[in-house]
Length: 68
Image 1 (cartoon, rainbow, N blue to C red):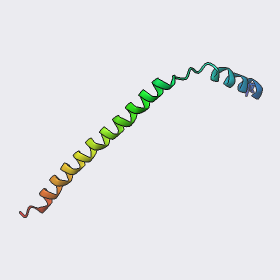
Image 2 (image 1 turned 180 degrees about the vertical axis):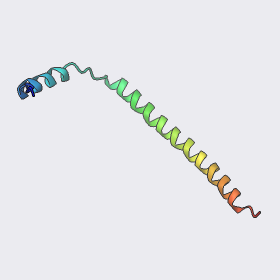
Image 3 (image 1 turned 30 degrees about the vertical axis):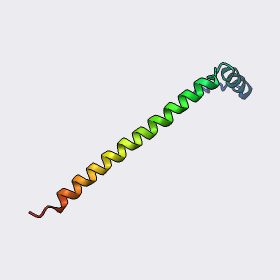
Image 4 (image 1 turned 120 degrees about the vertical axis):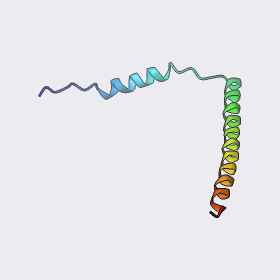
């Protein structure tokens, strides 16, 4: 069975550092807009799920209260 050569750990961390330097971070305005949209979408989805849950629970309670 042939042994594989492992890359030295220094080489790995140099690669991580060089890749990290390539990251472009959004400016403050873009970050605020994106964060606001995520919060608004999360709240809207939460409200939609709550409404659906209310009506489904109402329907289940109605069906289970029927006496056949």
